Amino acid sequence: MLMGLLSIQSIMDLVVAGISLMIGLGIFTFIASVLCSAAFFQHAKDVNA
Image (cartoon, rainbow, N blue to C red; front, side, top):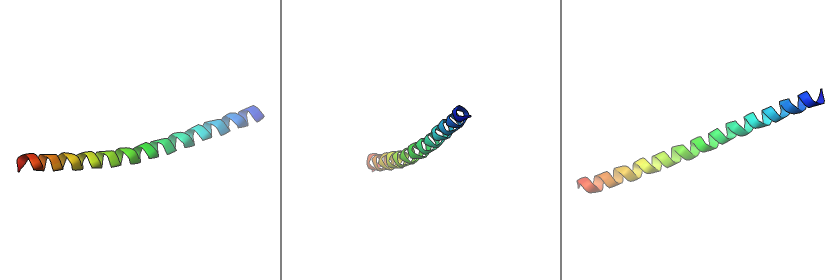
């Protein structure tokens, strides 16, 4: 009984850790893509001018 409870707790911990990791990486990816596109548009504007 205790072993089954422990494994459920470990699975829940892993699920929560995975979700928080995905959220953290998602925010990082969003910021990085915004910065990259801003830099790209700035560079393209400089080249065209």
